[in-house]
Length: 406
Image (cartoon, rainbow, N blue to C red; front, side, top):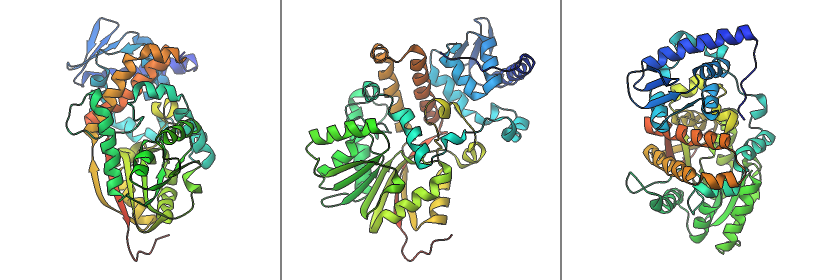
């Protein structure tokens, strides 16, 4: 059940009135059609946003801003025949949703992230468990047979469900190729997932150490690796990346930096630098956002933080360059973007999740959870369709004779 935040009656009415004024003004300028209580239409025309309970909708936004916007969807107070289309319009116009004067006052009104979500070794375990230890069976319902929970790389777009496994293997192979993984390679994988990358690396003859903080993922990944016959080549460890020791010819990490937290980006990249053997390569896949949006929103507590990925923060490519240049000998020598491919990947996941809603129910997840998960997948897809988000494959190598700055 999604409960409405409590506040004093006077304060609540004032915040609701202000939220209604701001939201109405923003919607009137956007290329969509917001219908309030089945009667009043606002907007320039476009995909329909059906606000069934305007009073509750504005009250939630007044109390919790964009967190309330997502919670209102979870509660069924608004809906859309094409949710991705509506969210794409909003993602296309982030600066226009909040008036400029309020943008400048963002530190005063935006909710700040709870200290408990800081990605210390202890906090990271809790944050990862919140998402990845939900249920292996849940993820298996909407992912393909590879159990890859990151962007695929398709030969062409649009894609179909049947093409998804091969596209996930193509993504993995491009990363392994970039890192130079082959017979005898000592490979470190940071972020195991459910083991598909480790299996494909072992099939090339690599010796793999893979680390994860998810007990649920580790259990299933070890089973899958054993079934593939590579248990003698792959060691999956339940530990933090900061605890890893040794030397590795190659390091690969797929969409894990998003869970590191800005405060620990220098530690993360220094760890990669420390573990990489001379002549080694690092291949990363990372979801990125524009640098100006990162700077503006880096400390804001969002719906995604509250419900999906506590402690997460997407880097910009510029932020990665700043951190690696300022704290390590690592340098990005190649990067390739696949944002449109992630939009397609998310569409396929969302469609499969919707098709299998009865099975989601059977696992014990209620209707509010299903709306939450649908909103998360659609929200993410909209980010990539609008170009607000991108996903990058980056190749980093160590710069020779570099003196690290303090």
